[in-house]
Image (cartoon, rainbow, N blue to C red):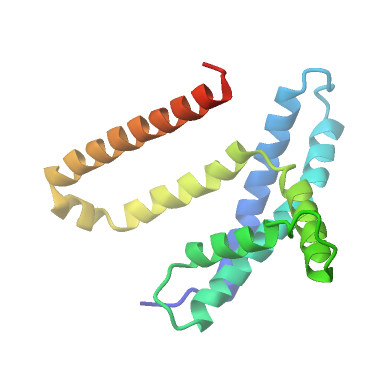
Length: 177
């Protein structure tokens, strides 16, 4: 398997960052009706979400580097998610140990800045790359035939029902349903 060029990866991350920042600023201004619909409102939102995007880019770069240099057969996404989860876990509550205090500060800083980014603005580049990935392997998709359609439909239905059951249980537990 061909390794991804780091320069190419950084270019893709920068393009994704621009797409996410634009989407995030549009969503932010649209969901805050009290803001005037002027350019400064959009640029303020972009500037406010820049540190969070920087953190996410660092997670992505660290995950890709782990994928490249750690001899396990794990996808880069697994490393990215693991790094993000570990660094955003707060230390032990009430503990005064230096490690716990540091982890509390680090996780609260990460959550503060990444929290400025709307989840929906992150989905646009992900879906675009997924579509491009599928188009790249169109011959493999064609050779799968009708069976892949049946499996996809069953997976979608199962995911939907599973999500609905989990949401229903949680909402009943919270007393909202």
